[in-house]
Image 1: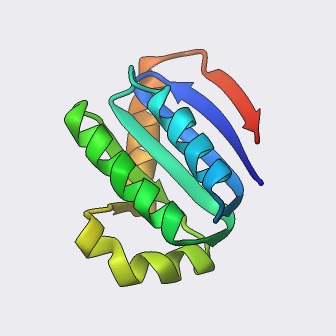
Image 2 (image 1 turned 30 degrees about the vertical axis):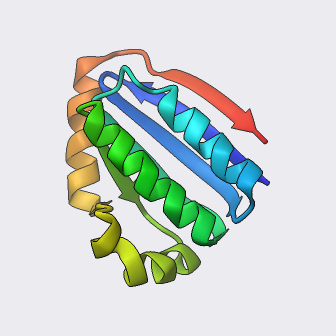
Length: 126
């Protein structure tokens, strides 16, 4: 099962993911949540609470990276858990995925918070 929480701050959509990205239903639900953020200029996926990620999850991240590029959106992965990081280390360069460091995310958050005074929140559990 995967749970997501979306917080919109200006042109940033921060998607907090919790659970597992191993079965097709959770992978496709992630796709739907990310693709619903088509008005964002930056989408940051917080993967700190993702316990496991399989090949389908990696493939979906690659798909979402291409979708984001096609829509002039920056897709950033943030704070991947150890199991996710292990999977990403094997394929990140091949898939073109970008992991934002803490300084980069703080800068993005700072700019986004100045752009909007009231964040918009959505939560999903699948």
